[in-house]
Amino acid sequence: MIDLTNYDSLLAPINAFLQCPTPDEWVNEAKKPEHLKTILIDHLLCELKAGQSAMYLIRKYAVDKDSAHNLLDWFKPYEDFAYRKTGNLASLKGKSNISKSIMAKSHSPYSQDLIDKMVLLIKEELHHFYQVLEIMDARGIAYEPVQASRYAKGLLAEMATHEPQTLIDKLIIGAYIEARSCERFAKLAPHMDEDIAKFYVSLLRSEARHYQDYLTLAEEIAGKDISERVQFFGKLEADLISSPDTDFKFHSGVPSL
Image 1 (spheres, rainbow, N blue to C red):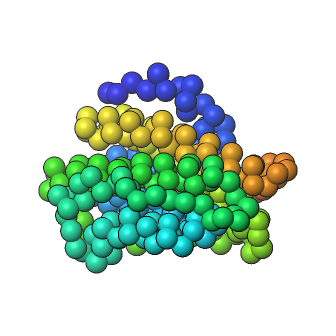
Image 2: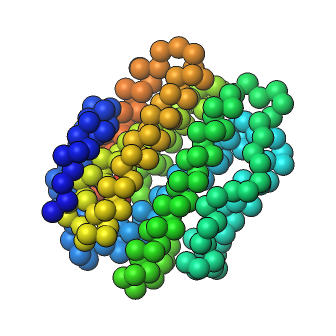
Image 3: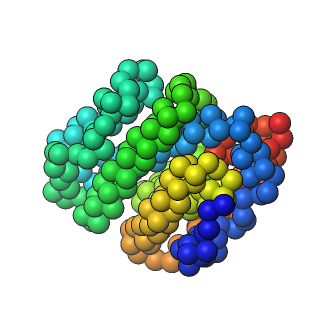
């Protein structure tokens, strides 16, 4: 069994940030061999959606028109694969690095820091997408679209509808999604085949950094204490994770199958 002792200091802030741990009932269901396909496909799509969320943020708030087009071009091969069933492992190889420049709007009120953090996050999420696909390919698991769980939708439904609070809320939600992903990879790793376990452990540092990056950006843009809003979304996130859920997915609640 894989040893996570060396990651205690990395996981401690994550576990303190989240308002509840993943229920044992979810872990017990997730480790069953018959759920591996669902876990891997949903994880694959979660990586794409995480990258898309970061891309939409900087397209809307921070970059010039040419950069906005460059970002769409960057995602096209992945979206073609996931939504249009074109492309394969070979055609996606090496596509996670963007060669075109991403420039800030000349009068953007948001810092270059937003662009820098989100572009790095996108590169990592798209690379992780490819790595999940490699694991699926090695096991002969064919990709097929799956419906998204209630999780992200439930969080996004409570966003404010006025700026800059909408952006701040999006960043806080991003922090919770990344933190929960990190926590779940750590929970699952000891129960998975060695290659998947090592992959999940390799993701812990990046997911932990992504959570912190989102939270730091939310604080910077707010320019004031956001702890009340962080607590609000933390409670909502914990409710989604700890309540019964009939749809088993990577971010689902207590299995009620």
